Amino acid sequence: MPMRLAIRHETRYDYDAPVTYSAQRLHLWPADFAAQRTIAWSVAAPGFDRALAYTDGFGNRVHMITFGNAGGPVSIVAEGIVEVEDVAGLVRGLDCPAPDAVFLRFTKPTTANAALRSLAERQFSGRTVLDGLHALMAEIHARVAYETGATHAHTTAAEAFADARGVCQDHAHIFIAVARAAGIPARYVTGYLVTGEGASSTAAHAWAEALVPDLGWVGFDPANAKCPTDAYVRVAAGLDAAAVAPVRGLRRGGNAERMRVAVRVEIAQQ
Figure 1 (cartoon, rainbow, N blue to C red):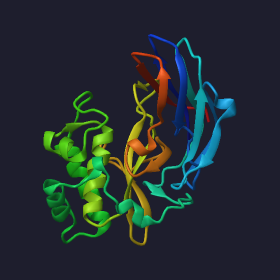
Figure 2: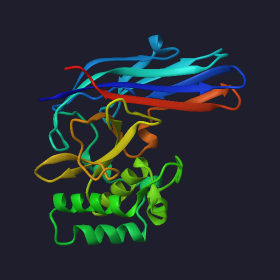
Figure 3: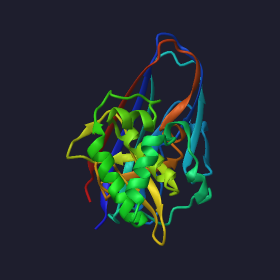
């Protein structure tokens, strides 16, 4: 039976001076596919009523907002209910216009150095692609401790792997770098994960998807050493974290920006 998850994701910005102009790209609208259906969803943000909405080359639903003359705190809130079915991480019925080969492309945070290429050779030698991906997920989980604050937004996969510490973004980047080094298309996924009744977080969740021959795209979450279940909500996917950040943009004015993120994911009433 599918599970319904209730989500509230708020990004709040405080400034020491008014923002004269801001343009922000939002990846905040969940994807619909065979295992996931959006029941209700809304985004409240300055300028959202005039937002440019489009589907990008990776099949993500994106909104571009602009606003100005904001003197107080700026809040961007996405919330709603999503119904999810546990299909062991299989991603079917999701339209992605980009060819699969695009997801072999290394980016700065997903470039494989010698250590990561060695890991690719070891994990996929003598194994099927699916078995190798599961083994890779397990090894990253075992070798790279989850530690908040150990890395930052621009930490690369090679750096996090060498330091053996990171957060879900780093686990996903390492997995993607190794998969691509092995010639397996892999992409970065942003979304949400329910971790317990009444649980809250200071960030959305991230994992990876890899293309398995004769099976299709499959999700892998090295941070938790499992494939996504009905406790996960998929929002967007791209080459790396920067490509699908929930909120990303530019501004004029608004000195000394301070950002706070609050995410709440709960099991909703069925």
